[in-house]
Length: 91
Image 1 (cartoon, rainbow, N blue to C red):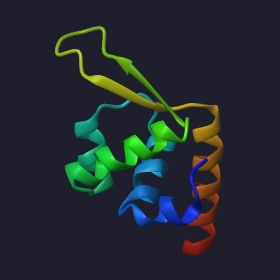
Image 2 (spheres, rainbow, N blue to C red; image 1 turned 90 degrees about the horizontal axis):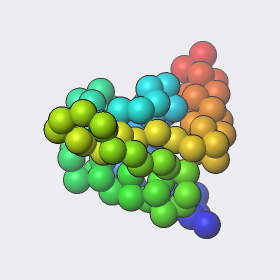
Image 3 (cartoon, rainbow, N blue to C red; image 1 turned 45 degrees about the vertical axis):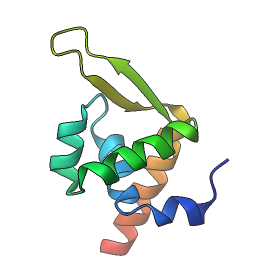
Image 4 (cartoon, rainbow, N blue to C red; image 1 turned 30 degrees about the horizontal axis):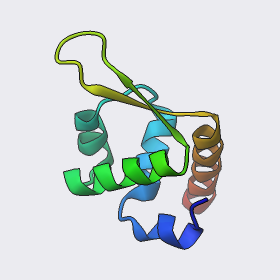
């Protein structure tokens, strides 16, 4: 289990998780460019989501065979809640 404090410590964790919720099946470059986070941050967040069993990682079947990142059911539940919280904050 990952504590909220640990999740919040990761700069960009919310942006990356919301991006993955809205755009399933993306590679690291798209996550970095669209989320506006640095490479190190993106990998730290992905590692955190993986350790929390919220992320599925598959290999792109076509060259260059980059990993593809998708939130699993647990991750989608978190993503949905974060999107709803973001909508409340922006309204």
